[in-house]
Length: 484
Image 1 (cartoon, helix red, strand yellow):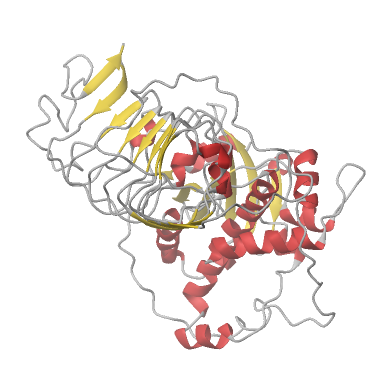
Image 2: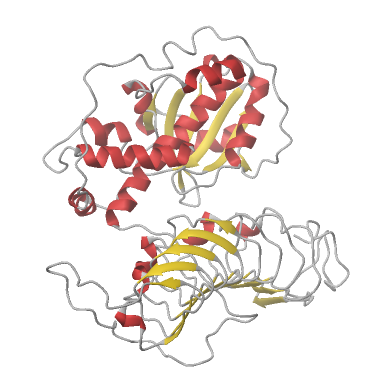
């Protein structure tokens, strides 16, 4: 991190070679024993980047780099167990990294006074402890996501001075004390539950007159029970803020997780095929061709899927109310069969993008997969086989062992790994690492335990009913978002 920050002199006692941040009292570092627990570097004129190894700081609970001169996108690699994250007052652009949605202990998030833009992904459904959210003074757009309604501890939310649209209905039942949505493009009626809190709402296009009656059977509106302290010291530092969100119910979670697996394998498959067989003219041609599903043996390769439970699947099924017609009976050939058959080889473009994932040795992967034993085989397709790998620290991952025939130009492998390592999206499974030794090429992905997408689409038993057509379309839409 010190090197990525260009070794600034204001970080006294820091060193890029050796040293002990705890024993030597490095500036801004707090420790418990020999483990770093806080990094507070606010208003020090820092620039550069944060590096790519912050995920190893598993004991850090407070990370504050506010009011510095950072730019570019917020790094995806952040300490994973944070309770407080303050990135305010920099020049960050782009969006909110999905890694923040995995920080279950997170209580305070402040990204105000940056240049963040675009819509929020559905990524805030698993943050039950988050009580203060400040997204103010950015350029965020789109509607507030449904997953906002799952922020069960949210007391202070600052969304002002963005370009949010739609209604604020998803905030109605949160245990809010302070809410600021000024200077956005919100519309609709203000929920009654928000009229007895500290609510700042000017600069929007609210509907006037009485709100329409709720649908029949809707329970009466009421404020949630308060079991939190509503003290006045919870407002985030450095100006009001805003928050922006995305979310999914139980059904949405199932759809995202199912599509997540598909996209990871599809991305790897088509990137490799495209490298060696596809020209730019072919791309334009294929854009006008009908798309059909991959053959079933390819679908079986799509890693495993994690769904919450049979109950979640049932909730997912019943939540869909749209009547979607099945496709016509006639089918077209898949474009793996025809369009990729005899394409000219395109000269390789050299990628200079960094590889932000771990390099494994063949020995590591052989031990974790019991020498790639049949007992650990979890999938097989035209690219290669996928094995379950359990490492000494208890972590379980999925290892894809790529057939040499699927990689006609081995020198492209590192380019492919570099590209896939840049993909971070809720509907794309994460690449964890790779191996390129002794003529072997392997990719290491997250592991999901409940079977493959192929099984969910085509198989059923006494415990799992066949997925409905509407559910299948939702899965397809989630997959499409990941591909886009």
